[in-house]
Picture 1: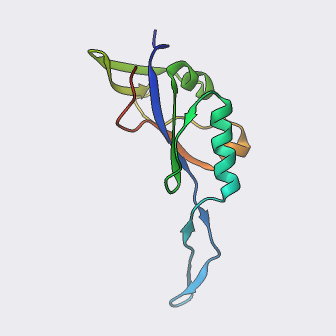
Picture 2: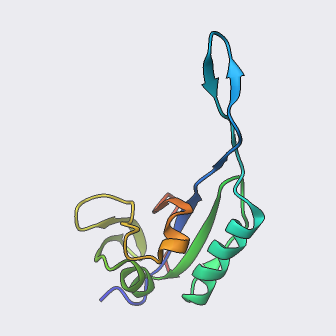
Length: 125
């Protein structure tokens, strides 16, 4: 059973686009900017209410930390955890990926996320 394992994952927020500006011969391009403060706060509050510890925001991302069962319950996916001695060597989802499916999250949160993924180093307790 993996209930005793604490893991961290990276939450990547979708950057907002600013209005496209004319460029060159009729081409248009838009620059990305950081998500709105309200978006960041809503995402942080969502994960905190789900029982995760939430780290500081850096650019368009922040980390969440929690027991493996919290991740499995929230995302509806089973984790495969490989240990090496008393440390977590890696965590994968059953399909071999490290990125969660966001479809079980509420739309008002999921639409602001690019990814929730495991990234090294993982935290093991």
